[in-house]
Image (cartoon, one colour):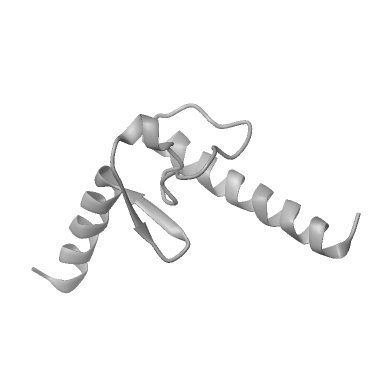
Length: 79
């Protein structure tokens, strides 16, 4: 296995671990593998679980995560 393949697998494992941490907090069952794209880059839910996804640069966000991000940004800016 090449160094590049090892790095890719480690990155995928780190992403899966991070998504499962968020899914646990949100009350969703953990994933055994990364879902097929597109999926929300924040909560890890697949498009068929959330409906619409907004695409960014190498990332997607679902409506629920976008609403939570908005709430947090408003709190941080004092609005």
